[in-house]
Image (cartoon, rainbow, N blue to C red; front, side, top):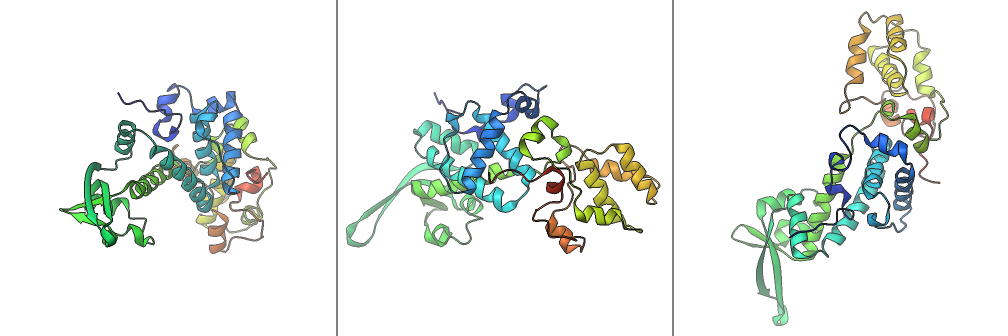
Length: 309
């Protein structure tokens, strides 16, 4: 019987499998800040290229993992997200490669990597024999390696093909596993509006200063604001937790007859909430008025995420 230690692979467990449907992860973290602190420390170490511990060593492995995703979602920095998730995927894939066959096969099935054990052997120079123990259909191989364009070693032309199947050794398969885990975890990370996060948790993630960003202030002082600028201010107000009445009043004062249409669209739901534009986008729109040293105006209001402590 297959027995997987999910504490080693917390990404394989959905939040709904871990906590009661009537309780959110924010409720859990509000009760115990340790997982959030552990997650911040873990991200910090990865960014500094320091060693990180096995998830099993934490008292709450799943909460640490999902806290890590929350922090990355708030950051919204593709470079940081990429580095952290790449590191985690590498560690997971290395651990998976050590598992017994039944556990190994179950995890591959979870990751939807359609490989099977099938050996093929061939000889190279000096009579040396090479054996490849796994095979995957070449179409599935092409799908699994779509992000390996710069890796000549992983190109189809470099592989052994026979009757429509690509034959692999365990090291190559480990690279496929790593990439699939990277894709899986990345898809779990979504933009989070800061207004979604309870104050008790927000205080742990941010050093709150509540400074109005110069770009937002500049737009606020404009006499004639474009509809796009009104949406930016409205999104900002939603993200910092302003009341619907105050946003509605702001829009009415700026000529919007039906402010609820804009508010409802920008508020969305938990999956589609808008977040104020990043500084890069604000610069492209010629709305940036100061070099604040942040990636998103909200960082000036809530404070920078303390990941370099």
